[in-house]
Length: 414
Image 1: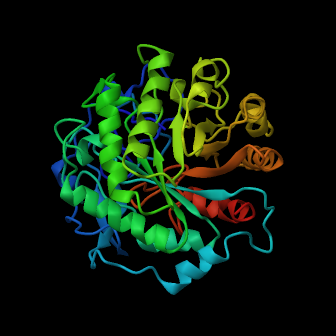
Image 2: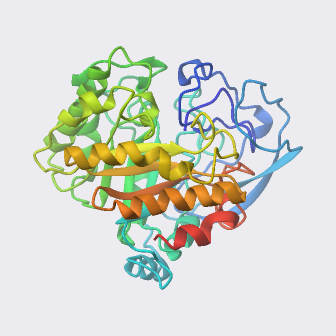
């Protein structure tokens, strides 16, 4: 999903919510201010229990905003209450993951089924931003609930500008890195995989970056911090688009791979994403199929991450799905490419509306992945996180729109 011009559901927060090409909406053109009335208490740790604070939404939502959420006079935002950053996951969470190879209702077949956990990438116009006002961290309690449903992979979108402040090659910010590390430790100690996702759309500071050397240094710095944890996954960059060339996208991904391995992180998977918002349905027509297959990794642990939404333009901005079969149809060509080229893939973002057409389409998508589980390793729903409010796809337990409609369906594939 893309960063729209403003988010919205609960306090004018900027969120990553778009997935596929909509030319008039672009990360480069984000211009959202967080109203002072939206400020929440500063959070000192991402590992937290849940409390709530009501925040009045006094700013008008720009007409260009493409998120399909209901208008609210006020929104309730989940704010973590601080506890020690050296947190041991609950026995319940650990037991859930230990059993997550499949519940009694599981269809089996997929190695991973999980969730995108948003918050740390919010407020991208305010860098570094204020924790609790501009951005937040996912709730450990919510992740534990999803683990209890069998989910075993969690993608954590972050901003490169917050982690490496000023320049891409800067030393990593102690606080932001510390909060990220605490969350990653919570997830991985429980047995799940944590995906560190640079949610930057091929941009740094609002401009497309082209230096493979700088990008490699960034990933060497990040991987150095997590090289001893083989349940960490490095997601090079979210949804490249409108780049100078498709070859540059491939070269940047190769630099990411080289940077991770140069840090001594040799056992972890690396997720690579293509151009055109890494859509599965356009993988073979956007140029990705021509350049991305040439990536190399001495550890042979590259996974091709693709995103797939089911509305008419594939953007994930509508809860109306094209048809009940569109899920399977939109991954068919990418599946052929993976098989023909001996590659492994994952659907890093997907979602559908709360209606019978979308429910069938989502099930069809997951069934297609299971049927081709020799090349598809799993899928992650978009999205979880405490600041989504009544967002149409919110998988935040236990009242999120998507959670209520889809958690039982997803659990069958976990």
